[in-house]
Image 1 (cartoon, rainbow, N blue to C red):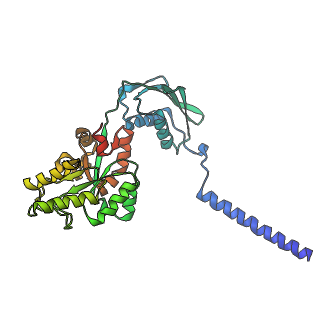
Image 2: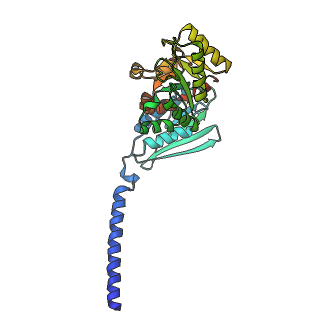
Image 3: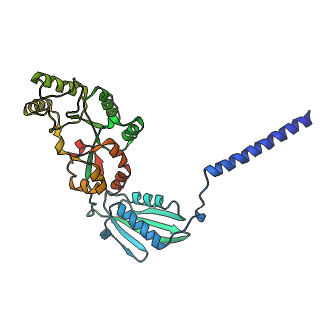
Length: 321
């Protein structure tokens, strides 16, 4: 019996050892260790090029830095932490035989960066905060239209984005849940009054009586109580002088903020083809109307603009800047 038990134990241990070996091989394939020595080293010229490109991506002007010998001296605006530049360089060099080190020389004033490749220092940079430097950027507010027509996946992506912006949609029963969803996330929405409202409870028409117009406005306000402001399409057929006067009276009586739609700049296909940065700079004091699907497609470009110093905020916050 003892001999048979021993054989069973030996067989079991052998099987376990094979399983452990196979597991190790699978893990090794799925999660291979990155051996820095097997990666390609970079030269001083390559380090210089990547470093200067990174500075440009962060909106650092060429006049703000110089190189003496092997060392860069960079003057940074105070709103740009040097740590962000260091992190970006580290990410961009992840596939190289490179070590990136940084340390603070004077707290809140100066810090040092070193890039080492294959045991040799290929770049040194000293960051110095300078209150006289300011990047050519601005606060920008997007008003995102038609998010209610996104599929569930895209809507969840949109609502999860960290940027601050304002949702805008027409009053409709189906959009009441949308308003609640946006408010629960601590985000801002506005209500758009235009000629596309098809539900009688919310529809505005120049043919309606004064009392019907007032009742409609009251319904919209009560059903969307957390709207930050209203956008009125003043080119719509319903917006006659009489209706305009009635709407404005109802809003003013309740101290509700409203804007004609032409107050905003509309970002369309041509804007994207030209590059939106020039429009953001030229019309920075206005909000930008954009379709929800287009806004999602801009995500990568918005990240680059954020690097350059653009700050994205809601329209209500923009008006207090």
